[in-house]
Image 1 (spheres, rainbow, N blue to C red):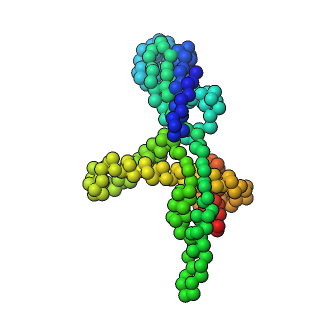
Image 2: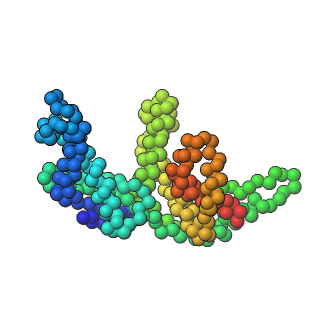
Image 3: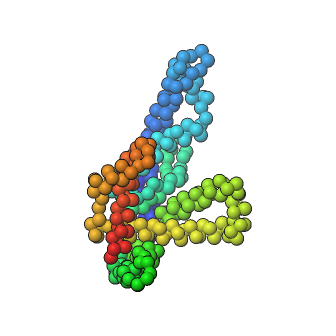
Length: 274
């Protein structure tokens, strides 16, 4: 059973209850699987008495194994129950985990927000028109993409779900921590060198995440309106440019992501040529 709540910004909160009967069934299955792969003194592998194996199990580890089995299925059922189309992996928080009782967890996610692109063509044409002016003796340059991005964002109206911003901000922060670590610095040393606090960095990343996500959804809407798609031949051409068999295999595994990137690039080319 799943109860759905929705914030004003579009963040979806699913409160999902897993019946105690289902918890017990899954726990038994998890322990049975452990028994089959356990060897105890005096017993062949998989032949030790279940109660002896169970006595030696770490309760928390077993609980984690049960959760790994239950949560994805319960979340998938809740999504189906409420006919949702999430655009991100859920942020899970277990709220009730008592022995012999129903378990409960919350899953935060969101669907694609509604997007209004406004009069983006008129604004973009003001920028591309400047690039089309030929000045004798000067090299002609293409339109400034940063200006185009800002023009599109200025005309668009999108309410980005906070859960999506938080997830992207955390990804950016994790990326920063990896980069800082690779330089042999601690986070405190990095912050001191940049004269920033962690709160300032988080705020900057939240602003960047909001802008990046907004632009991504706006590009998708423009592509939808202009019927910009990706043909099979374009996918095959992209795959043929892989630098190695391993890279090609990885691209083939993520073919939908590749198609999304190609569609985004075609949309950007469309904007440059307005």
